[in-house]
Length: 465
Image (cartoon, rainbow, N blue to C red):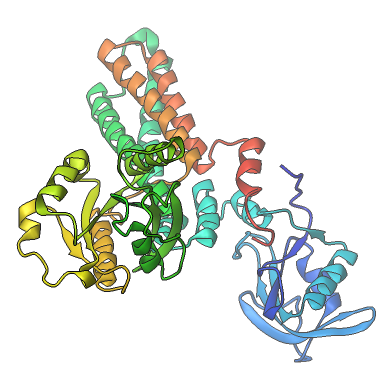
């Protein structure tokens, strides 16, 4: 991690690189207002930065040794009531690339230092304005690309995950304190910690941590998009369907069977949810080595998908054909956490749609014309409904690998404590394993941390945040 010093006053452009209507230059540290008293000339001559109240905005001019640079708005946030917990100022300037560079040069010439990636949020963490999970929530919120990923990041930023961990740790800390007290009175053979209560707490913690661990797969899906595999026999119209859903010519369409040899992926937002569509090679007996590799990859993608769209040619495949084909995907149809949707394609070539098809195959079926984009909206509606049925927004969901690994270490320690209680081991050994569980839970929120962990987390942030 780059070296940092809280005695430094740092600065950076916090808005995205490039030219725009406005840009924001952010300053944080003990020298914030001393520098601005030299560089900022308020329009209201009665305004004094030394006495201006926190959370106020002032119009004025930024000047350099060469003269006025820009008319700006200055937002003031005084310590400790700021994002970083320090004195903070934000200059809303015109978005010229030249102006952004020039104002940074002027600030650096007056002794400020360019902020490292994530240093504003790092200072917020060090000044106890955020814990580590909330700081990571900031980065996830900036990177959120869908409603689901936004809700997940916002819950983390608001401290939902932190509150759960804090509650668990506090209860364990209370028991450790009582166990330590027992050690002080070891010669008198007394018990201050109710072992029955501790057993119940350990079982509750085990259940809650396992639930969080189970949510990790879902959290990854939220971050990267819900994987939807489009499968079926050659020439069923899979690639045409992908193009229709994406509303662009992403995949090559041909009447020649086996055109798609590799999986083609793209992501689209539907109803606020991110779906990652995967067009696969047609399922049939392969005619050459390359097609064999493509079909093997199809089965791999089917295994990874949360939702599978089985596309069949409504002009050629009968009830019986579809039923036989579905036998290969019975495990998906019977799995409540996965979904299989039948898509009967090419209805533009069918005079009359088959009746009772859904009840016959006992599977949701949507009839479409991918070529003419008919009923594609029904597929979109079905996909969104499947997400909502899955209850993605219920409870806490973790999506961070660091959290997952720390929780795994925590559950191992908790299981050791559970076994220790069954064996009725001495208080000192019992206390040791509880402290290990506390250590791993504390790693998540940052109550226990190292420079290496901080460097790994904050180096991924953008400069200015």
